[in-house]
Amino acid sequence: MGAMKQDLVYEILNELPAGVMLADDSGGIIFANNAAIEYLGIGREGLKEINIDHLLQHGTRKKEIMLRTKGNERVTVNLSKKVLSNGWTVIILNDITEVHQLQQELLKMDKLATVGELTSGIAHEIRNPLAGIKTTAQALSEEIPAQDHRSVYISKIIMEIDRLNKLLLNFFDFAKPKALYIRPFDVKRVIENTIYMIKDTAKANRVQIMEFYPTNTISINADPDMIQQVLMNIFINAVQSMSAGGRMEVHLVEKDSHILIEVSDTGKGIPENIRSRIFDPFFTTKPKGIGLGLSISYRIIKMHSGSITFTSSDAGTKFTVNLSKDIKG
Ligand SMILES: Nc1ncnc2c1ncn2[C@@H]1O[C@H](COP(=O)(O)OP(=O)(O)OP(=O)(O)O)[C@@H](O)[C@H]1O
Ligand SMILES: [Mg+2]
Image (cartoon, rainbow, N blue to C red; front, side, top):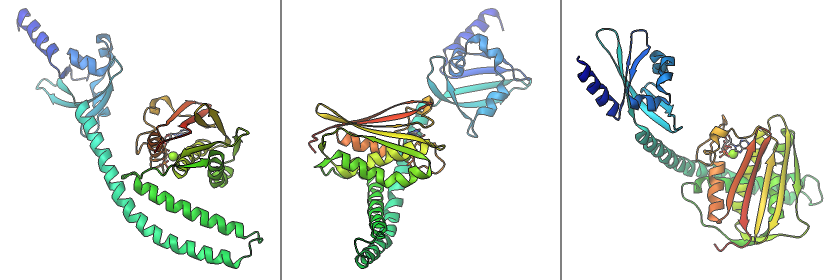
């Protein structure tokens, strides 16, 4: 190839939107066009460091690899290779980031639909026996005099059944959200009720709970069941983050026409690289998690025109729910 011609070939290769690389038989890169360098997120000088066999191993079976460009953009590229007759390898990198994102979105929607179907079936199957258990518990409570200390256990059973019923309904509602039922209620009462429900779990996890309320009663206009559900999700997450025990603090703060409910834990914190995803449906880092807790909470708070935010470090996490005192449904 004459000098002119070779320059021209380089120029053409560098203009291509696809990444093109050439590796010798030991896997060392001897040529990479601009697009390839961009996808790999390295400078020309970094090319020496890259071994093509290593890169190929990083690919999934479909030969898709996630890379981070120098501009710190996340790209998904499809990698194909062809071994030439002299033992060298040509590698082509195609940017399929958008296709990949679309696929992920579809997958999410698909999962949502499946969860919707599954839960409607399961909810139905669970709620019937649950109704039976509740009736039996109520019959039992009528037999036990109110001053008997065991009546507390029965009311606890009934309360938990009601909660399960609600949980099932809410889970089912996830695909088809329910309308708000706005009414005035005492926020402190709802916080206390929710804490009561998780206090055994907290105790088992050696988590101490501290509550801070203003001296005056704060009544707001919102959907108390939904707010309770949000608090439940935040409390449970806090307790779960403290596998070796710790302290959860709940502060109720009045601020002009708003209230703040702040929940802090001394748990392991939320790693920086997942912070943007914790509100996504089905995002979970827990072996038995579903990843719906925060996404449902987020939606509920949005429905109330409020906000839910957090700050986190390796010393713990603080979630803040900000609600207007008077929400017009
Ligand atoms: N207080 C917290 N401390 C540390 N990580 C948290 C905290 N709250 C949420 N997270 C992170 O956010 C992820 C998503 O939380 P989310 O409540 O939506 O789902 P989950 O708890 O994993 O599952 P589910 O709530 O459906 O049982 C968690 O898996 C966890 O990684
Ligand atoms: Mg959760």
